[in-house]
Image (cartoon, helix red, strand yellow):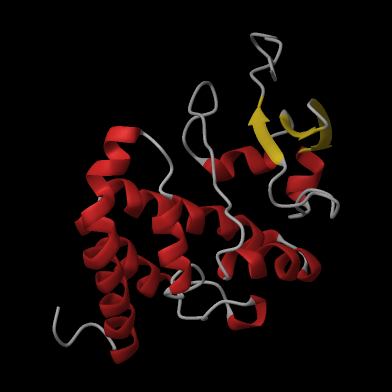
Length: 193
């Protein structure tokens, strides 16, 4: 796309393409066969500085935005679709923090993600709730759970989401969290095991 991408976009594209061609493409079949998470690829992506392309500078990222994120996803996906998804899902997980997190949460969670020290993800189930992630935010039946010490417990309800707050500050990356909408017409119990 000559003339459309900026010099900065082209720089990120070249960096992502280099990682994709030198490491991702040669290892793609290995990880597809093994069905394992490609930690060495993730480390190479982090070492190339790609893990925080879209994260604002004040939170440890490069501050270059979503277009640069998309350019990187495209290049990584050319070498291996799974690696493109690995990268994109990590980005998707940061957006709720960037949009609704407190300043303390943004600094606490986004910095290690931008450095490639931690991963984050975003899960969405379509059963009963649909695929609109934002629709649960104002739903009185929305419930959030956290797994701590092998036990799931409720920590917030829809009131939290309406105030655009995230989970309590004591939740660290690496803990498991789940937000869900309950279909009260079915009154089904949630199996959190």
